[in-house]
Image: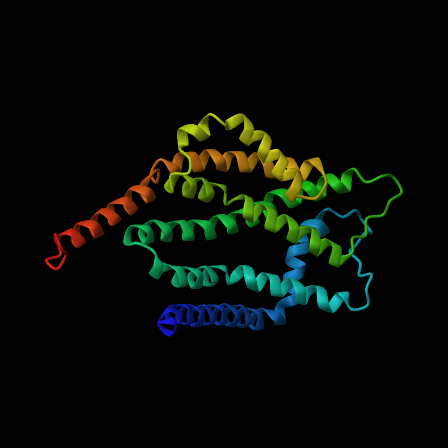
Length: 263
């Protein structure tokens, strides 16, 4: 009996190992395809800052190995971002067998939307936030201060913003999931709009570098995404709970109609 009980666990662990290996192979394949262009990728990422540097200013490398390792580090991170759809598919393939049919129908669009929103958050940071922020920082530099940003510090700064905006753009998905599972209703969330607005600025303060400019640029889109999530949640509200109850009722009916079931 003990051996039979461990069979499902072992099969799940084997499947998990398979999915993790697929994720690693996917990231490695993308990295090998991009590593030759590591310096070009870094040049693209640093373009918003270089464009707004004063005349005569440039980025610097304070460590001997930074010119080599920093672009490689960026390429690894980019490989993970590019592989995100494949990684999410592996997650989906692992959990899908444990879901009901109606749950699979609802979860697939959410995973697809989550990926698009993550990329949208990164694009918003690169095309909107970076130019505005770096222009503001360059213009407000004290007199006599020459801006010379270290390439490694710059990478840490922009990656923090990329992750902050990418994660924050998942707000509609979080709201839809909460309403889908019946944890909360759109009507209850509408009454909490003032608290959500304050919370958006608090989250912006925690996720972005310590400047009011970046915090505001993150808080405002977060609140707008909250409103989008409220709108979309109307199509999902209560479906998870009702679907599960319907499935349980079907199973109970099948068990009751079983001729072998003792009356």
